[in-house]
Length: 92
Ligand SMILES: [Zn+2]
Image 1 (cartoon, protein in one colour):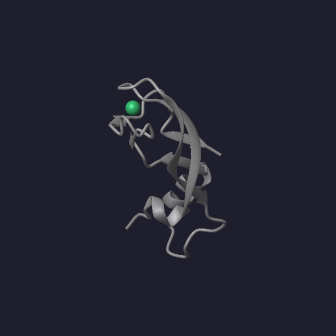
Image 2 (cartoon, protein in one colour):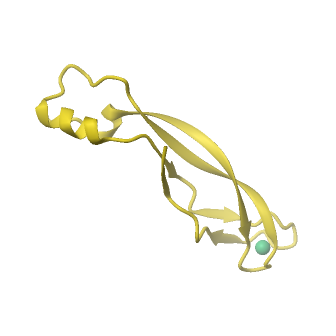
């Protein structure tokens, strides 16, 4: 059986600030968005086969954004909006 992505990476939650503008009230605010850091492991498990080794050699550490919606911080708005114009994956 082939190894899964989680056998290649260690996962760590990483909050990152982002400046977003609410599409409802147009107010810009700083939001702490949750990302998951997938840091490439230093070694593969012993059960890795030749194909896994090739995949692992090509693998790169990256951040993937977990939040795709936020609630507006403006107390008079508080509406939920989708995050747009922001990357969902960042290679490290
Ligand atoms: Zn708003």
